[in-house]
Length: 565
Image 1 (cartoon, rainbow, N blue to C red):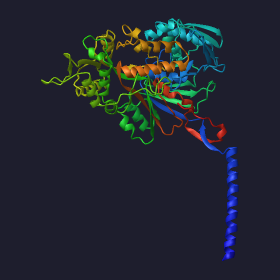
Image 2 (spheres, rainbow, N blue to C red):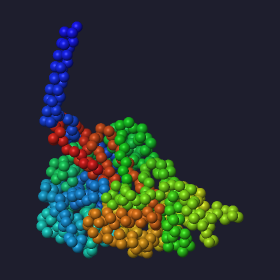
Image 3 (cartoon, one colour):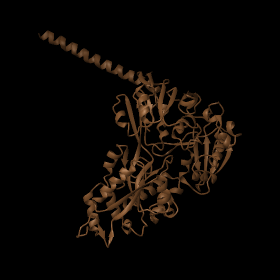
Image 4 (cartoon, rainbow, N blue to C red):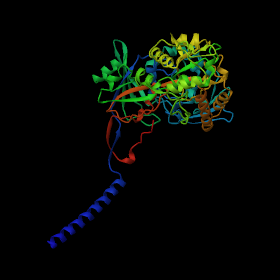
């Protein structure tokens, strides 16, 4: 028995020694680089676009978001922005700003080529900018006016300058337009360009080129894009992208179930419950560049109580914003604390928030000596002034339902609100611009504007004829906004915008409700998708070159890391 124990001990020691040898050998293999699964080139991705095609031309797509989806992949811009709103070089690899903040100089990537093989040059950018200021190009009038004030000059084939009439830090925002090839289009008039066959056979410099159009009943039913081999950036993993057009999300969902598409460009609340039942469909939700808020006319002589910041706080405190987001918006929104978006480089995380509390709101009104008359009634009164006013809102859903919920919430305070629904254009022209309103439920859309620049809506110079519809007249805030607008030092701008946000949260010149979100659906077989906050729907393709359908064996040192969105 003792002899057997001795033999077992020898075997045990031997096994331990072999284990250490194998462990060391495994470590050596790991150091050399074991094969691992990695994305490979290949595959075809098909996505359903909600809408109809128009012209595939970046200066003609301003009012058609599905055209911008195509143009985002076919054309390049000088600058693009990451999810925090920070500029990244696209066609340009470097830029600089003069000390006076008026001159911006740019250098074009030497390896940038058009899909027909011609190099991208400074003249292409100058040509495109010239079109942006033309009165017959379908762009907002203020955008055309802006470009008429900017001088562009070519320094050489690959460098150019923009000279502004005054310092303007958000200028890079305006450089996200797609660049057109001057060597193909410079001899066309604007009228000829608008009707040119080029708009259906575009030549760009982006990661994909337009390879074919799918026709059904002489109408464009789809677009086929192929990866561009000479693209200056990272070559996409997915070799081909097909887009097919559908009138709404419901028909796109049917196409997905019939295996005609792998992605749905926009998920609306009416089909969201059905999409959530699909086991192989991933949903990606991101904040959009908009904020829904209640403007209050701070200069109304009939409503002196609106000038009281504490009363405005009570009004916001009593709105059950979470209920509005979850029930009326179907969860497709994020509660808002201010006019600058969360995750923006300018957002201040330490900004104080207003929590929902009817009891605390009532306490504020009592402290301000608003009372319910003893002889009966439900509206609070002070010095014979009743807490009663009108709120106008758009006549499109979900705004009337939101307004009705707010009316109900405020009634619990003893505040009476009469709701008036109007067309959105009338809301702007007949109420906001002439300042002939008490309160207004509106959505501010900052699409394609990554730089927060709150100046237009909150600077005191804009309170009469500008977009400062509330009439907020705060000199301290105006100085913060002025200073942030003329320096290109991000640290300085962050400080100014932090001060602005703290002041906004204290004074509440308007009542922020929520930020809308965008929901996108893609089949689980598509890998590598990452999506941060968007500045327009086509931003979902920011990291598309890292999406993949095919994977295989590759050593770690040859893999490419997908950047954060």
